[in-house]
Length: 496
Ligand SMILES: NC(=O)c1ccc[n+]([C@@H]2O[C@H](COP(=O)([O-])OP(=O)(O)OC[C@H]3O[C@@H](n4cnc5c(N)ncnc54)[C@H](O)[C@@H]3O)[C@@H](O)[C@H]2O)c1
Image (cartoon, rainbow, N blue to C red; front, side):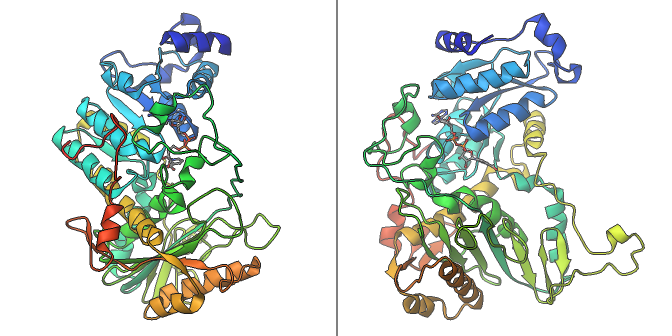
């Protein structure tokens, strides 16, 4: 089948590959177990991540991908072409409109891999339609939506997973147990580094017209209709507050979730401060590309440290913290854990007493980055695990709350010179050290903070039980807990 045919079939509304010839090419192991035994999956959003999920789900035993949905017919054509190339033997129905997919009685569970502004609403609608759901990170575009998604999961008794896959990494569970055992002494603080290069997204001279293959009203969903001042339609929605949550909400959920796990999964902290900025690039993006968020958890603070900028001008290399580019480092009285190894405070790997096998000489943990997360979701769907512990949506909601807290502090902040910033963090040695590193890094790139100012966020006070801000910043901060307006009919309801 050529792509022409795919397009025609897309318009008609259904594509199938049940032909015997293709069946024989598909490994026996991967064939359907029979109509009643399979978990039938619909994938909502088939961009970069949705396509990766499609590929993975199509290979899982006892799973049948039966539908995909995307307001961009080009994206669906690409997804279908990929399935065709892999000679996928089952009928997959494309739906431009998510609501059509959710109406389908043939779908048991969905994977939501849309842009962030759709995550919670798609998850809520899935629960209301009686489907289980795997909702990508961040699980919500704002805190209100995340709570409503949790409420929907409970009310409709659905299995709802978050897409923070490292929660399925059993090695990280061992790290948590090791920390809890006190082997390295008391936990003092957790550092959450994220160092990944991103280029400038460029600067548009006029609003971007959505490509004709896209039903833009559907794509936009609950977000406000405003001119798209960017060059690329897909993916770059991350860097605009109307649809995305910046890097803090993009990769932040992974590092912040791991850090929260090391801390023993506390509720969000009572105080937060962000210091960040968009440096080096004069482009359209609204979200910061370097900075830190200080989470004042009682007992042991968490410092998130992120940058999308290179180590030095003209190189592609990025920095690291204790050898870690993306992750979390748990610092205790007598050492720390980074990247699956335990170290003492002079950065030496801790030896296992009496180990004879050279491979087991050092205290280490086998990490797999949560490669079984989707399989675990399927297992939970089968077992009807309505609150599957670490992977349950509420866990994802709390970790996503950390992103929203960091972004809210930033969005209420103002540019400030280094002296004013230092004044705000002088009682916090880890925040100070992180800020000094940020300053030195920017200086290596030729950026002086007294000339190109960073944004000093507002110190926010937060009541985690009620999920509202308190204190002086509360009136402004509470406005950012939810959208001022949801574009009808794409409304996240107060009552799910
Ligand atoms: N867990 C992970 O490690 C991981 C990795 C990458 C991305 N993600 C998450 O996956 C999500 C998607 O990221 P991406 O990189 O694929 O973005 P993308 O922009 O490439 O793709 C998003 C797709 O969703 C479609 N879409 C928009 N509205 C929709 C709707 N109403 N119904 C169905 N489809 C809709 C878009 O047309 C697009 O094809 C993001 O939220 C991202 O944070 C998670």
